[in-house]
Amino acid sequence: MTHISPTYILINDTTLRDGEQSAGVAFSLDEKIDIACRLDALGVPELEIGIPAMGDAERASIRAVASLGLNAGLMVWSRMNRKDIVLAANLGADLIDISVPASDQHLHSKLQRDRNWLLTEIGEHVRLASDLGFGVGVGAEDASRGDPDLLAAIAEAAQTAGARRIRFADTLGVLDPFATFERIRHLRSRCDLEIEMHAHDDLGMATANTLAAARAGATHLNTTVNGLGERSGNAPLEEVVLGLHLCHGVETGIDLAKFPDISHRVAVASGRPLSWQKSIVGEGAFTHEAGIHVDGLLKDPANYQGFDPVLVGRQHRVVLGKHSGPRAVQRVMAGLGHYLSEIAAGALLERVRSFIVEKKRLPSETDLLTLLERIETLEIEARAALGVVPLLQLIDRQCPPIPEPLD
Image (cartoon, rainbow, N blue to C red; front, side, top):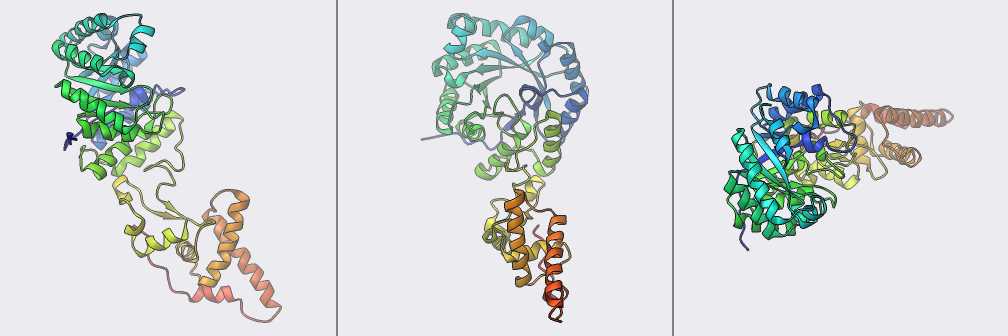
């Protein structure tokens, strides 16, 4: 089996278009401008920034983003409709994606039209957009459920009319990486256009499908910050960029070191908080509790580090919970100024485990200090009756510092 492995992929981020199409999400103008600027600062080369046909406010926001003088190329989205395309003109965008039905399901059930009509209309609308000065892409909606030969015919009609790109949309997120690879490879063999992959995450495979598309010959990939988007969302920018870099040695020119800031900004602006265990940007992504993992990390981060979290502006964090070991307790408490022996650490660990079972959450620093104080208080009271110096008090004073925190 042969495949194309490009050494450079261009990311087209659609947070401000498909991301905002997530049910209930609406960015203010200030939020759109801020998100666009942050994406540009990361080095994202293309941004899809809106739908002109939505109305005056949407067109004003597109003009505002275009007026920023960003380095990124700017794209708008349109239906295959003459009025929509004309409304997109003179807003400052360089590119337009004209969405067309790429499955018989959509062609017949949505539009009640046939393939000959579709191919004729594609040519006319691509030529119109080209005459208005746009670089034109044709968005093949529902391509994943369509006939590959129909998609090839769409690509041929688009290219003949002057389009430069075709977007393969897995609109319902029904593909797996193996099917994606075969579909993109087939399309690559049938056209010379730029191929853009647009994946949805309904089956949890948007990132995998996007990476498979790149291996099969796609030149452009759609993403959104945090995977925001309709239903289960789109392929997350952070996962796609890091996956290309680590798994395939493909560079995008995007620096994720400052990504946590824009991730947080989009989460707040969209009203869609991140899952604790969301890869790369979730609070738990680099958080370690299990004793065997913490011990291994303290000995050498490479023992339990698939990649350096510094790449994405993060660092490892050790927390205490049910599966922690004494060494983790010593490590965490040393950071709070308390150097405990294994005996003292074991006593505190039992309290931590009880806390987790009761509260169903990790103990905060304040909680840990309170638990330690309770242990010391109980021991002082018990040993005072015997006239001896509290053991924990001595341990706390005499134990040497624990090694420096992990990078």
